[in-house]
Image (cartoon, rainbow, N blue to C red; front, top):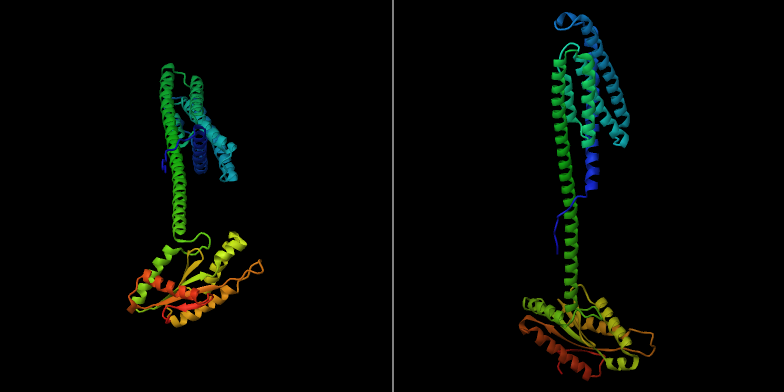
Length: 406
């Protein structure tokens, strides 16, 4: 039986699960960060609206500083509105992961890249720093997962926005070139980190899918093996049953009865007497010849049923062959056994079939098993058979004990 657990993940399934995993991560992070970003942007608005930093700026004139202050405050005000809208929308969506919610998370990431580019472009009014763009590029790379095409498109758009804004806000060509080169480096860093994170997400998702598939395969294999083991056990039990039971009547056969009788002999030697009896249906060949073998089989089955119903829990019965049956009455001496067996003889004689003139009688021979006799199973059966022969010779339809004088 094969237990090969090698599984192959369908590329389409992998793409779908990666998409679902990245969308879930993006939405979870957006739900967490959006309220925090509202506070951060609002603080920036308050700071840049309330304080005039003209006196702190040596490298720019007051007009450019004022334009910078107002532009920064306006940009953060717009970002506050966007973050607040995202917070409210995420609360309304709850735990939804619909296509619209997934797209919204990616749009927010793209907007923040553009926002970082705008802030850096505005900063060129008073400085040549690209800190805002670098921070946003790395932050988006760490916190957002997207496809390669989406990632490249978003970073390319943000870089082009930064270049366009710098062309208007940075008059010094040397510094403008430095800013663009540094921004290109920041873009490459963010893009590379994002692509690497996406690759790790894909690998992690693939491993999770592989583990799930292997777990399912293992479960299915275990179920199949359990089924095969159970089926084999049932087959073995059936073979054992067939080897030890008579097919027609369902009673144990001669071999099984002999083993049971050996156990009873051991109990007899230990002080617990038993009685073994042989029953033979009188003139059974005549029944087969007159009414057919089908009717004969029915007679055998009904006789076996009556025997089973008449016996107690510890007693045993078997079909020894043809029309002969064996009965073992455990814990029963010859006196009590005689009454039980004679009652069984009467019950068999009371059986009736649709064939109106069919009557059945039984001859029974039995012997008691005592420890002092030191008999084996074969000798016990021989003694019961001798008693049965005497019952037949005495006119049939009678009960004879081996202990009775001939």
